[in-house]
Each structure stands twice: as structure tokens, then as C-alpha cells.
Length: 320
Image (cartoon, rainbow, N blue to C red; front, side):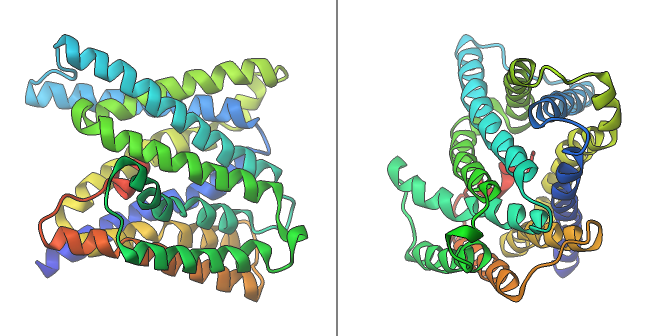
């Protein structure tokens, strides 16, 4: 058991490292390509990667990729549109937020920890869907609020960047995206829904790009190709697969903590690769947000140990 936990933890930590470094990649991509065009290409590439995986799986298991029933097709179409719209809002607000941060704002750390607030928002908004919320969640909300204060507000209103607002909106729409995936994923299938929602998201982002980013050309795509490949293949394809494998071995407590390291790796990546540093107050804010994230997952961890069904808040979101 200890050996399996160690193996699962290592696999999940590698996945978290990939997702954390994705914030560095996204920030770097803004130098070469506009946000909507970038998200359109990375989403469509992600759909292609997952599509190849599904085809390979079909050739091995000899099972159809999609069920043939009429009811399934209706659910697949409707569910993929709903999830794809929320995913589009989520990743585009995130990319826009990263793009408008001023230099020296510790972009990766702010974006990483503010995005991670979805872990706390999901159980809160689950109340409207008549799902029970543990009192522990409200403790995590208080801790997270203090963390955001030190991270973004300790210098007053002037300390808030437009990027902070956009990334918080990303976490907000991420919450509804997760709740949508929780509703439709079990019916449609995780990889199937992932592929379909990426197609919807890529299409929406592409249309907006054609309207609002008319100066985009092949030269921009060529310059941003490494970043597009990283987000489409490594972040969406490889890391998602690592998560599925890792969760087969690691216990829920180990899995949750390992996946929560994403925001920490985002901060380290911004510091080591991009040279961004944080003030003492900002570091303290990051620490509080991280504590809040771990605290918010305690009811889920305890519930898993008792044999209850785990909420998919961390599981499905990591497709990005």
C-alpha cells in the first residue's frame, strides 16, 4: 500500500508540475500570439490528442467511442456545448488576465493561486444544487479571503490589478464548468466529454479571435508553436493521462495534496524561469490560499475513506 501511494503521489506530482509550469507557458505565449487565437489552437489540439487516445483505446478494447443510442447523442451534444461554453469563458478570462498583468506583478503566482480558488467555490455553489456543504468549507473560505487580501489587497484598492479580476472570473466560471462536468461526465464519459468540450471551446475562441484579433497571422502561430504544443499535447494530453493513472494508486488524501501543488509549482516556475519575486505579504497570502485549498478538500478526503463518492472538482478540471 505504501509503495502504491508513493507511486501514485509521484505520478500526480509530475502532473501537477506540468500544470503549474503551464502558467509560465501561458505568460510567455502572450509575447507572440493573442489570447483568443492561442486558446483556439491549444483547445483544438487538445481535442485531437484525446481523439487519438480514444481511437487507440477502441482498437485495443474493441468498444465504440460513443454509445449509439439517441438519448446518449442528445446528452452528448447538449452536455458538450454547456461544458464547452463554460470552459471557453474560463480559459479565456485566465489568458486575458495573464496578458494584462503589468511587468513585475508575479503573474504566475497570482494567476496560479487565484485560479485554484475554484476548489473552495465548487462546494459553495454546490449548495444551489442541493448538495451538502461541510462547515469546514466555510473555515477554508475565511482563510482564502485572508489569503487573497494579503496577495492582492494588502496595498489597498490600488494593489488590485485588472489581471486579478479576470483570473478571479476564471475561477468563477471554472466552478460552473466543474459542476457541469460532474453532471454530464458520468453519462457521456470523461475522455469523450473532454474531446467534445475542447472542440466547442476551440470553435468559440476561434470565432472571437477572427472578429477581435484580425491582425493574427501564420507568423504569430509559428512563433508560439512551442507554447501551443505544450498546452495542447503535454498539459491537456499527457498530464491528464498521468492524473488518471496516479489516482488509481494513490489514496484520496495523497492524491488531493499532490494535485494541489499545481499553484506552488506555478509560483516556483515564475520565480526560477521568469525571475518573478513576491513580497513577504504576497508570499504569506499564497501560503494562506494553499492552506485554504487543502482545508477545503478535507471533507472530500474523509468521505472517500468512508467509501463515499468523490466530488470531481480536482479530477476533471486538470484537462486544461
